Image (cartoon, rainbow, N blue to C red):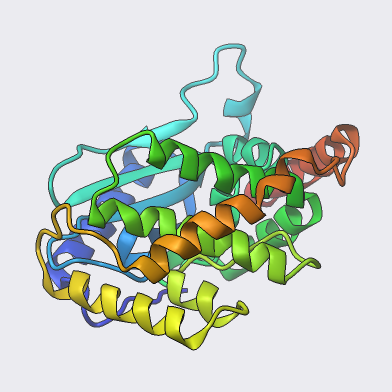
Length: 264
């Protein structure tokens, strides 16, 4: 599976492809899923946005039997253009069980460098089976809190806005714990006003043609939306667990062992 928009720089994409191929050869890992995260996948890139490639990998099955396992992340050199790193599937599964919403987002990124659809579908089904609305909601609340600990520039406001939109989506979809990844889809699938969608689209258009947004003031309509949604989402902190930890861990073990068996 591959989904690369025309606006991505072909030379950069080729370098990312090369890095992924070299990692598999040099480290003896399998990379069944590699996507773009960050502002490009979230729906609000700037002309100078870097490339945030994220991937999931598996080591050789016997490597997981070692008493001294290696690191559960792989990182490549970071610069102004490339931010390419990945998580071991074991780490990914543990994070999903613990309520990390990033795993579900990566599996539905609109930009895919390379991907095994069967792997994606199996992992997505597992994540959905253990996803807990309380934990996912708290994840987004804490992301917003971390952003507010820093100076909120106009550029960083987009991160808080996407978080608020994710929380609104959760409240509008009580049957699900897995919001979409990109901001326009979050708003399109939520009960927000057309005026708010338009204000967001206008701000995205400004960001798309401006190399540095600076510290300007976001539209008041969007500022109020963020404040209101973060306040409305406070009850997520008190939601009781939907899945017992023992049940979720049993599902995690069964899923992970099944994926290792596919490599043998």
